[in-house]
Length: 468
Image (cartoon, rainbow, N blue to C red; front, side):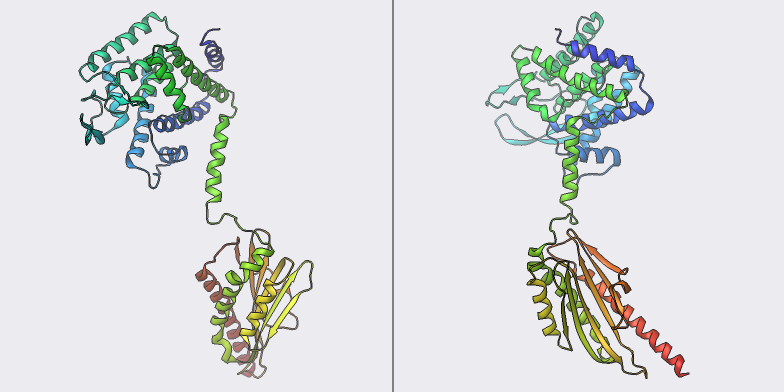
C-alpha cells in the first residue's frame, strides 16, 4: 500500500465536500491558526499555554509573568500564518526573497539572544530578521557531539539550490505533494539558514507547499516533539521515509479535521476535551470561591464557632452597645436546632460572657449536624416613652452541605416572633472557609444596627404624634 494512500483517499473526500461555507471555513481556519501558533512555538520552547495563546490572539490579553519575547513570537508567527494564506491565494512564486520576507514577518524587530564565543564564553548575539546567518549555528546533541549545519559562507548558495530544487520538482510533478513538502522541510532545516526561527520557518514553508496543493494547514503538535526530532534524526542518517510517514500522519489528522468541519461536525479533537477540562479544573478549583470544605460535625465542632459565630456575635454586640442606655434591661438569647435532636436554647440576662460560653458549648458538643444557629440581643422598655416598647436584633445562620446563609431581622414583639416573620431577609451567603472577611461582617452588622436605629426613630415619631 502506498505511503500516501490514506492521504489521497481523504483528500478526494474533502474535495467532494468543497467549497466550504464561509462559516465552516472561518471556524476551521481559526482552530488551525490557534493550534499552529501554539504548537509551532511550543516546540521551540515558548512558555505560553494554548489558553494564553488564544487569549493573546483573540482578545489581546497578555499572560502575567510570561516573557515579552514569548508574546512577540506568538504574534509574529500569527502574522506569518495570515501572510501565508494571502500568498497561497495570490499564487506568488517561492523565491529566496519571499523566504527572507517571511522571516522578517515572523521575527519582527531585531533582538539579542544569549550565545557563546568559540572558546565557550557567554556573550550576546544580535538576531537580524530577514538576513541569512552571520555566524555558525551548529548545535550540541544529547550525546555531546556537534551537529553541523551549513556554514554562513555556504548558506546563500545552498538556499539558491533549494529553491531551484523545489521549482524543478514542482514542474516535473514526480513527487507526491506531501513528500515534496516534507523533503523541503528537511532540506531547509539541514541548511538552517537563519540565526533564529529556522524550525518555525521550516513548518511555515512546508505548509505553504501543502496548501498550494489543496491540503489544509498541518500542525505538528508539541506533544509529538520527540517523535518529530527522532524522524529528522533518521533523515540525517539517510533514512527519509520515517520523516515522510510522520508528516503524512499529521496531514491525515488535518484532513480528518477539515472533513468534520465540512460536515458541520465537532472539530474538537479527542485531546481537546482533556485540555478544556484541565483548564476548567484550574479555573474552578484554584479560585477563592471554590468549594473545599463541607458542613459536617467535624467542621461544626472545630471551626464554626471560632471562625464565624463568635466573630459575628462579638462585632454585632460591640456595635449594638450604643443602644443599651435607651432601654431599662437587656438579654441574650441563642437557639440551636437540627433535624434529629431537641433544640438547644440559651438565655442570659446581661451576662454576655456566660452566654457566649454556653453558646460555644452547645455548638461544639452536639453529636448531630446542626441546621440552624441563631442569636439575638433583646432590649426591654424604651426609657422615654409612656408606652415603653421593646426591640431587638436577631441573626440566624442556616447551614447547608456546601454553603451557609445568614439572615437578620429587627424584632419588635418577643411573644409572637416566628421564623416566618424574617425568613426572606437574607443578608449574606458563603461557602465554608478557613477564615472569613471581618470587614465584610462588620459592614453587614452596621447595616443591621442602622435598621434598628430607623425602627426606634419611627417609634419616637409615632409617640410624638400621639402626645400632640
